[in-house]
Structure formats: C-alpha cells, structure tokens
Image (cartoon, rainbow, N blue to C red; front, side, top):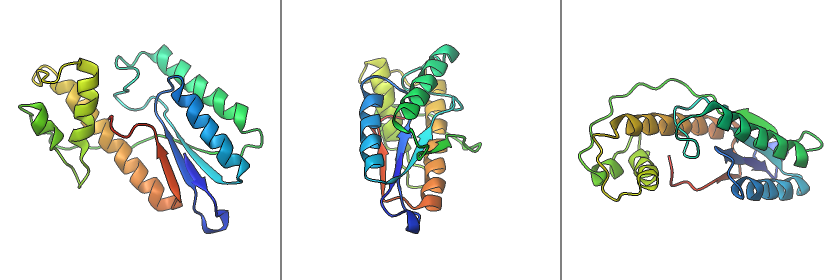
Length: 178
C-alpha cells in the first residue's frame, strides 16, 4: 500500500498486495495498522484476478482467487474501521510486445524492457515453481510469456500510480517474484 505522512502534499505510502498467504497478509495488515495509528494516508493496491498469472495460484483456480480476495477484504475491513484506506484495484492496460525465445535461464535473467529487469523476476518465479535450476524453457514458453506480460502490466500500473499520488514509501511483498 501507499502510506502518506503529509496528506496536504498528496504524498503517501503504497501497499501492493497480490496473493494472501499466511502469515504474509497478516504481517502487512499489522504494518498498515501502525500506519493508520500514525495518521498516515494509506493507498492499498488490491488484486482483482485480472492478471494471467499468480505466484500463489498458478492454475488460476477461480475459487482460490475468491478466497484470497475475501481474506484481503476481511483483513482491511477489520483494521480500517473509519474507511481511511484508499483501495486501488489492480486493473491494467493491454500490452503487446515481441517476447524473444530464451535458450537458457541466464538469457531470461538478462531480459529487460524499458530499463525494467523483468527477466530476473520471471526467472526467480520460474525457478521457485519448477524446483530446477536449469528448467527446459522451450516447454515453459507460454508460462514465461504470461509472467513477462503480467510483470510489465504491474510495472506500468505502479509507474502511473506512483506518478499520480507521489508516495513517501512503497511496500511490496518479496519484490523478486513476477
């Protein structure tokens, strides 16, 4: 989310949420609760199941998405009695790019787009999922492409949001995954 120590200047803190595994969500809610006590302006970015990939729900099972969203909504409602948290739904713009074929994981890690090292996060997610330090990238091309596009959508969403609200701080769970 985004947290704002100076509401008159439009600055804030942003909390980015994608997936709600325990105890990560609970830890983030505790941080937000502290920010609320400090009278900070909070902006919370909430996943609305729009992305083609999810680190915690690889198969995009709708019921898992609903449970995740309910956990997030319930947690926010529990700590935000005065409706001070500004919720931003993670709705992204369509992106069309030509994604190269990667021969190996090192080549994927080096892939950048608009100075964003998107390949590194995608490689990290891929390695975590596959549990293989040298996965067969040809078999995973579709998964890689989805992860790259989802990562770029999130990147541009946040780039626009940060430009708009000019936060003091941005909190992101584990910035190494796509």
